[in-house]
Image (tube, helix red, strand yellow):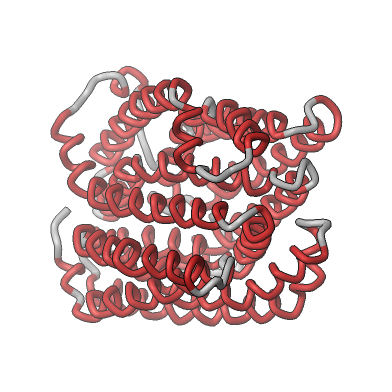
Length: 441
């Protein structure tokens, strides 16, 4: 993206990412407020179903992360032909895997949701089944879009990714008002809204990549497997995918623990967690920036510059979350009524936000440092650190805080914060040592 009077390439890449993330978060907050008006349990049901989708997409992180790292490194080395081959093979794998998973989820929807919402009331479970069955139909479109957009960012084109996501977000609000207010005022309408948005988003992403000068994709090559390229993608992507799956599984289990505390605590948690996304805005922004910029610099063998750039981005990330966290604290009492009509839930959520904000510094730090380690190829050590933090620290503490110390929603955030600080310590040590700079991918 060419921005007048701005010559810094990092800033040129960052501005569209910032605008996209802010716009997407605001749109999601508005969409969540519309969902919250469906029923007292709708926000919890939809949140848990979306977490299942996140777990599924996490299992396919091997494709998005593997292709992004490889494309960034290859394009940094000016190897467009091989980068295009990686893109084509990633699209093939994404289509096949997502369709198979979609079919399996449609068959096993009821037992899956019964397992993940064990103490849910029958009406709540029924809502979840309806929403999830509509939502899962969007999985192939979501995965293809994710792969295409991540490759665009990895190539250095953040402007196209911004336009796709902002246009999709605007369509989401339009469809939401149409279905939730007119035709289907229920969770089915919310699911159909997401389905239509993801179809439109995929069409935009395909159009953008086909006209991009950074890739030279050939339609016929997409359907011809190239196993050496598969191996390269999986070498980088599998550890990242394994890590992401266990992180999302941790979120699912923690969500199930919250549901087990009752409708009130679940509602307070989801309201606070939704508002936390405002303070967590920089996490997505800096994750995209650091992966692309570090990948290009390492591909060009500018190792010292890559390391200095990483420290600079980390400092900017921490400053930004501190500012946004302060704004959220100041406005918390005015924002919670947007997502719940119950004064008791509003008060509980406003109190829980203080505990949620304990996560902002380690959260943005991990989302700034980890992509740099992944761009260098240090995906296995990242996976080990994450698994230790989530499964050895976070989940046992969540159970302890929620069911023995009866902290409710606050306990979920506190456990996650402690886990994140431990992960941050280990990740920072790996980053400072700098071995990731010289790994082959």
